Image 1 (cartoon, rainbow, N blue to C red):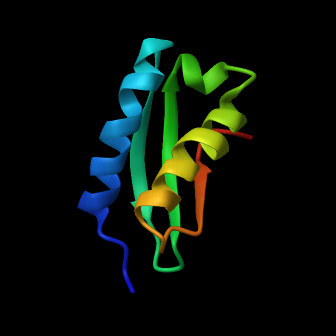
Image 2 (cartoon, one colour):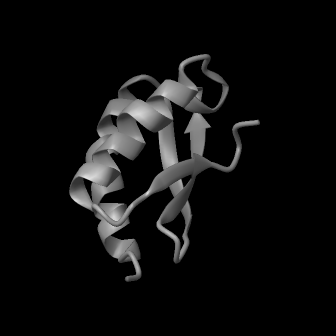
Length: 79
């Protein structure tokens, strides 16, 4: 079952205020058929040492809670 891209955007809108409070943001890049959501962390989030925790503990956890079909969230700009 394909994940609704609009629903992913709606959930990201709920997360964005927390990221923006610390000078960061997140951009949706793609949603794959296998349940992987690709994002780009921006601003302060892109170079922060806590960016992986933000991605997995914040963004991914919230998306999985709201959309059970989401299997993983991957940041395209984290090496």
